[in-house]
Every structure is written in structure tokens, then in C-alpha cells.
Amino acid sequence: MAFPVVDTEYHKEIEKARRDLRALIAFNNCAPVMLRLAWHDAGTYDVSTKTGGPNGSIRNEEEHFRICNAERGFFLPCLKGGLSMSGAVAGLAGVVAVEVTGGPTIDFVPGRKDSDICPKEGRLPNATKGNTGAPHLKDIFYRMGLSGKDIVALSGGHTLGRAHPERSGFDGPWTNEPLKFDNSYFVELLKGESEGLLKLPTDIALMDDPEFREYVELYAKDEDAFFRDYAESHKKLSELGFDPS
Ligand code: HEM
Image 1: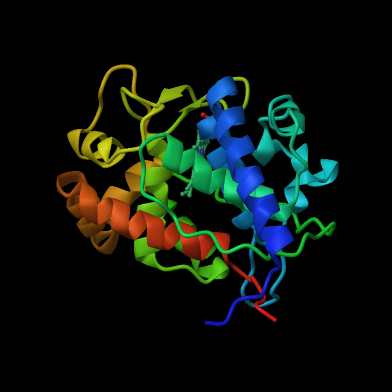
Image 2 (image 1 turned 45 degrees about the vertical axis):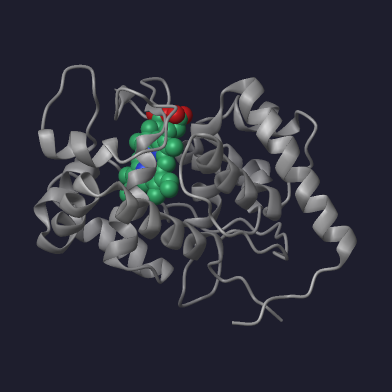
């Protein structure tokens, strides 16, 4: 695939943004929120209309303050801490968040165009879809143009962070070390109920679908396989609708 040629100045800016993000994340301990920000910006993509996607539209208040982005009060101050918020920075924030918490290195190709157009509401997955969890995840991720393997690998992003009752109504982290990117999300998923740890209905749905479950089992026993597939799926997510011309 050809990618946009960006000039040296642009590259320098991206490298500076990468350093600023590392410092910002270390200072605020906000890797999980940054990863979720990148995912919520990108996860609105619709492959059939080529709308939404990783274009920084989440920086616009209309989209930013939606219920699904209920980290309001945190994204903006975190991002306004010395960084200009563009599509590139939203995408890079996710890549840096994974890297600085011990996860795989994700290739990041600069050159995204920012958009001020907020996609329609309701494009992100709904965690409460219990019984219809797997079909719901397929509806949402296939609409983005992603695969079943991408669904499972990317769900491993819940190795970082926690849910907050005041934001989503759910409570608690998925793993015992929520600031470490590793394969423990899958290990915990296979173990079943553990005191103090969270499993969303959509996390449990990964165990119900035979194709999904195969990947859950693979990633639980082989962290290298998880890191390899996660890096690939995260790159795909971060490049949805990214027009190289
Ligand atoms: C947090 C749902 C996929 C990364 C959350 C929360 C919910 C949720 C309900 C808790 C929010 C809160 O109360 O603060 C879902 C659903 C998904 C999904 C239904 C469908 C598969 C993903 C993906 C990623 C991701 C693909 C990244 C690759 C995160 C992170 C947090 C989080 C890092 C923790 C944020 C924090 O600590 O503040 N998600 N998510 N999620 N999600 Fe997801």
C-alpha cells in the first residue's frame, strides 16, 4: 500500500508529539484513557459510507461529550496539557499508551487528515448486549471492515484500565495489573469469576462464539501470538479509511 509522503517538518512534529505523549501519559498515569480515546475516535468507521474513523473528530465537543465517551472531564484536560489535538495525535496516543505499558510496538504511519464532521451517534459497541454479545460485536466490527480475529485481539485492550460506576455503570479492572499491557485479560477471561475483577457481557461473549474462543485460548497461553495479532489489528484500526492519496 502506498502512503502519503509527508515532509521532514511533519515527521519532526510527529516525533515531538510522541515524546510529549510519553511524558503526558507518565505524568498523568493515563495510558488506559489514551488507548480508549484512540479506539473511540477510530471505532466509528463505516466501511460502506467511508465515514467516521481515526480523524480526530472526537476532539470536537459534540462527539466528545457523548455518553459513550463518558470520560468527559478527563480527555480534554489531559489532551490540553500542552498537546494540540489532531487526528494524528489521537491515533498516536493509542500507540504510545500500549508501548509505554509494556505492550507491542505498533507501526504508526503519519499523514491522517483531521475532520470536524462527527459521525452519527451509536456506532460504538454497547457493553450491555449480553445475550446477543457476539452477533452485536460482529455487527459493529464488520461494519468497520474488521475481522473476527481483530475483535478478539482488540478486546485485549481491556488488559489496561478499569470501568467506573459514574461513567459506564460498570466497576473495576479486568486484570490485577491494569497499568501493564500483557495477555492477562485472556487468562482471567478463561478463569471465570474472580473477586474484584470485571467481565463485561461483551467480554464474556468472546467465550460463546467458537471462532472467538479459539483466539481467546491461543492468546491466554501464548502472549507472543497476542502481541503479534494485537499490533496488526491495532494498526488496521488506526488506519481505517486512511486515504493514502
Ligand atoms: C473501558 C466497553 C472495546 C479499550 C471500557 C468500559 C466499557 C467498555 C463499558 C468502561 C468505561 C468506564 O466506565 O470508564 C467496551 C466494549 C467493547 C470495547 C463493549 C467492544 C469490544 C475496546 C477496545 C479497546 C478498548 C477495542 C482498545 C483497543 C478500553 C480501555 C478502557 C476501556 C483501555 C479503560 C479506560 C479507563 O481505564 O478509563 N470499555 N470496550 N475497549 N476500554 Fe473498552
